[in-house]
Each structure stands twice: as structure tokens, then as C-alpha cells.
Amino acid sequence: AALRIRPAHRRHRSRARRRPPTLTALRSQIPLAAILALAAALRFWALDATGFNSDEAVYTGTAASLAGDPTLQQYFPVFRAHPLLLATLLSSTLGRGIDDSSARVVMAVIGVLCVALTYLLGRRLYGRGAGLAAALLLAVMPYHVVVSRQVLLDGLLTLCATGTLYCVVRYVQSEHLPWLLAAGAAMGATVLAKETGVVFVGALYGFFALTKGVPLRLRHLLYAAGTMAAVAAAFPLAVLMAGHHSTGKNYVLWQLFRRANHDPWFYAVTVPGAVGWATLAVALCGLVWLRQRNTWREPLLLWWIVVPVVFFDLWPVKGYQYLLPVAPALAVLAGRPLAAVARLHLPRRWPAPVASTASVLLSLAVATSLAVPAAARIDPAPTGTLLAGTGGLPGGREAGHWVRANIPEGARLLAAGPSLANVLQFYGHRKVAALSVSGSTLHHNPAYQPVPNPDRALRTGEFQYVVWDSYTAARSSFYGDKVRDLAAKYHGIVVYTGVERIRSGSDGTPADRETIVIYKVRAS
Image 1 (tube, one colour):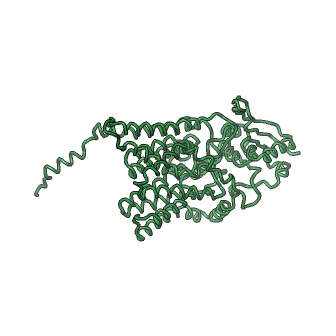
Image 2: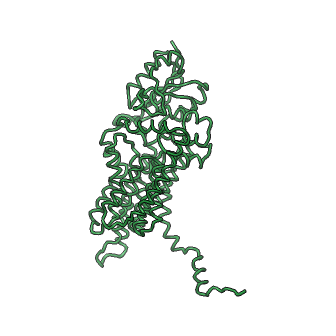
Image 3: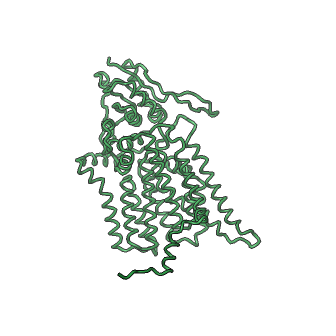
């Protein structure tokens, strides 16, 4: 048999391809590695210093139920208000050994991956310098740092949405159908991460419909829409096959008719400081300064930001973390002018590295303005106030552990609100009802059962303990006072008191404040 001999020049090329990376190539990756290390440090530092908040308890409890945990299945049903992509990820990654620390580790890893993906997005749009600047800003951005340290749907939502945006960019640049199909699949995953991710379909519609010179074939669009629908259909099909379609309808009605939980100016007050005023200023200056270089890239990022902002401003239900998916796009817009400084044409008498040095120093200055408040929010000085979505519930884990160790199995507790009830059920493994759950099916989460007549429930011995907490009392003094009244009326004896040292007054004087008080009651 004749032997095939590869030409010498081809053998040389093959050996060249297999050569290990040079020292110069490795050095070029040092800035990105340092940024990712910084992102990891901010997200893993003191990760379990405070226990879960209500949403974290629900999502982790759902994941444990999905993994087959027989204890938490009693308190956290698999099918609740949101799709199950995060719960599936946690249950498949951690199995039955799900606890607060391990679940938060998964979320922190997702946050670091999002920083890396933001680098790829910025590099693809504006070059390597812009990608590094965007990744640096997102790595230290207080908004992303705080939310990505919690077991919330929005961290995974942001990663999936950013992946969708990256695939769209690749499609516009290449017009290759596989990239648009990948964007459709990523958008389906975005919806599975959290149903509100469907708002980005409107952002993409606005971009493709109103941006001139952007290619989009109808056949490609139909294929991508079908891919998205096929991926997103996983959750409704699972609900239907499990026989929980009526539960899904109840959740939809509740989401549509929920009462407003914040005023219309909530995001205007809270989000700018969280993403950084310097980030907003640099992004705006870049749009003006580099307007002569604007192409389809800027409209894509602006549509990606504006549509969710307008939607959630108009939507009556607002959460601190809901706008997190726009943070990577905002970081890229801010990274663009920071990188452009390095390409300024300076007079010949100036040394060549001046522009590059100025770009690096300006990026570090903006990043420092974000890193300082980010570090402060990781380990804040207790003030006695808590905004949902910004961290764990102080004292909740400790109270839950006490409940599990000291309250007999089968005993039931009545808390002021469902937030503490969820936390106590996760850590304490005891059934906890909530006094503030509305009796109207349109105004309460279908997962919660209302207590229409708490007096009768206590008289008949349905509950043996009532629980007061400062978090619910601060939001609604009525229910805080009601718990105290019930405890007094039914001979309540304090069996547990959680105390937190806070800074109060204008001078920050430390003082002890009760956070959670558990009363043992008995019927009249």
C-alpha cells in the first residue's frame, strides 16, 4: 500500500499550532485574570456572614424539594411563581446537600462568569481595552456584587440575558444563522431563569425594527423564534405534565393584580447609586464624545437598557434586583470611552504611553469609586433597616436554628409576615403561617395560606407560638402590633429573643435592638 506523506510545510504548520502559548501571550491575560480574581474576592468574601432572606429561602428550598429532600418538601413546593432553571441548576449541582453556603457559592460563581462574559461582549463590540474596562466596572459594581452574592433568580437571569446579547452581536457581525439560533436558545433560557426576562424580546424587536442597516432575514427570525419557544416551553410543559396547571393560573393572576410595593420613583432613587454615578456619567459622555463613530452597536445597547427600565418603572411591582440584567450593557457603554482615551492623538512632544496611562488611571479611578461602596455593602454597619433584595435577614438563621432545636415537631408558629415565615421554615423545619397574608386570592401568593381568624386559631390551639420581627413591623406596624396583642391576650411567654447591635442616631451611637421575639402561647 502506498504511504501518504504529508508535505514538509504542512507538518511544520501542524507543529506550530501545537506550540505552547508564549510568555507574551500569557502576560496579555494577566489583566483579565486580575479582574476575575477581584470579582471573585468581592463575591466570596464573608459569603455566609448573614443567613438567608425570604427569597433565598424559597429558591433554595425549592431546589432541595426538586432534589428529593423529604423534609423541605413539606414547606417548599416545587411549582411556585417562577420557572425552575435556577432550582434545577442548584439541585443537579448540589443534590440533597443544599444549604445556604453551598447555594450562595453557586451564585457567586455565576456572578464571576457574568463578568467574564461582559469582557467578551465588550471586546467583540469595541476591542480588548473596552472589554477589560467593562469587566472591571461590573466586577466592582455594587449593584452586581450585592445581588450576585444572593440566591436570587436575577443573577442567573443576568448571565443568560448577557449571553443572548453576545450571540445577537455575533449574528449582526457575521449574518450566520447558528448565532441567531444560539441567541434564541439563550433567550429561552433567560425566560426560564425568570419569566420577566421576556421583556428583552421587546428590546430586540425595537433594535431590529428601528435600526437602519442591520441585517435580519425573515427565515432566520422564524427559526430563532422557534428555538426560543422550544426552550422556554420546558416550564409550562412540566407544570402541565405534573398536573399543576391550576396552580400556574393562580400565580399568573396574583402577579397581574399584585399591589404596588414601592412608589414610581423607586428605581430612580436606588439604582443610580448602586450602578455608580461615575459609571452613568462616563457612559453618557461616551455617547456624546464618540457620536461620530456611533453605529448599530450603540442602539443595541441602549434598547437593551431602556426597554426594561421603562417596563419596570411602569409595572407596579418593583424589586431592587429587577434591573440587574441591564448592568453589563451599561458597563460596556462606560468601557467604550475609557478605552477610547488610549487612542487619543496627542502632540508629538508628549511621550507615547501618556494616552494609554491616562486610560488605565481613569478606569481605575471609576472602578475605585465603585469598589469602596461595594465593599461597604458586603459588610454594612447595621442600621436597623433592610431593603428586600440587598442582603440576608439579620437574625433569621439563628432564630431558625433555635426553633429546630427547641420547638417540638408538629408544633406550629404564627409569624407577622411571610418573609420571616419562609426563613424559619427553611432553617427550623417547622410549619410557620403568616398573619399578614391577605384573605383575597388575588392579593396573596398562592403558596401561602391565610389565617382568616387568628383569635379562633389560637383559642383552638392551632398555633402554639407567635413570632414578632422588626423587619415586618418596620414595613407594617399594624401586623407588628397585632402579634404583640395576640401574645399578651393568650398569655405569651418569651422563649427566644434575637438581638442586633445597630448604629442609631446622627452620631451613630451603638444600641441593642430586638430583631425576632418568639412567644409561647396557650389558649384562654
